Amino acid sequence: VRKQRAPFNPKLPGRGSDPKVEQPSNAPTPAVLIKNVNVWTAVDAIDSEGGVLNGVNVLLQDGKIAAIGSDVTFAGAEEFDGTGKVLTPGIVDLHSHAGVYPWPEGIWATEDGNEMTNPTFPQVRAVDAFDPNDWAIPQILAGGVTTSTILPGSGNVIGGE
Image (tube, rainbow, N blue to C red; front, side, top):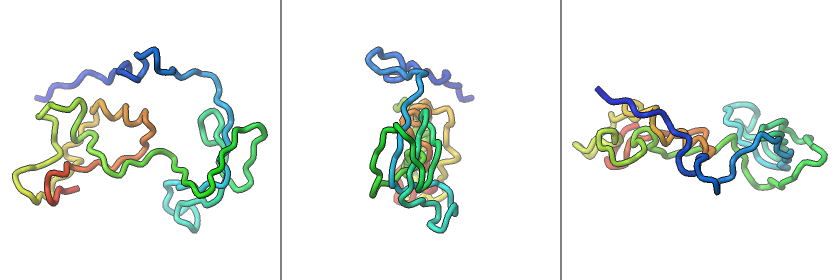
C-alpha cells in the first residue's frame, strides 16, 4: 500500500515564507496594452491562420485579458510594443517529467520514468506512472506554466509516450 504524501505546503521557500519575497497584494494592477503582437490562442481554428492572431493589441486589466483586437486602445495604460513578438496564454513546456519523477527527488520508489530492462520500450506510458500529487506541480503552475507534455524518462533509446 502506497503511503499518501502530506498535502502541498505553500510555505516552501519562495512561496510566502521568505520576508524578502514580495507578497501579492489585493490592489488592482495598472492596465497594460501590448500593441501589434502575434497571439497564439491555443485554439485550433479560430481564424484562417489556425489559432494565430497576427498584429493585434491585447489589453490586460487587473492581471486578466480584457480585450484582443486590432483596434483595442485604453487611455492611461502602460504600453509595450509587441512587434515581431509572440504572446501565448501561458508558458508551454514541451518536455517535462513532472509527476513521473516526483519532487522531492531521491525516492527511488516514485521514479517511474524509465524501464531500464531493455533499450527499446515503446510501450512505456507516462500516464501509467503519473503522480498527480507531485509537490512540483503547484510550483510549476505558480511559475506560469499552463501546458506540459509529460514524457517518460530519456534513458531508453525508444522510451514510449
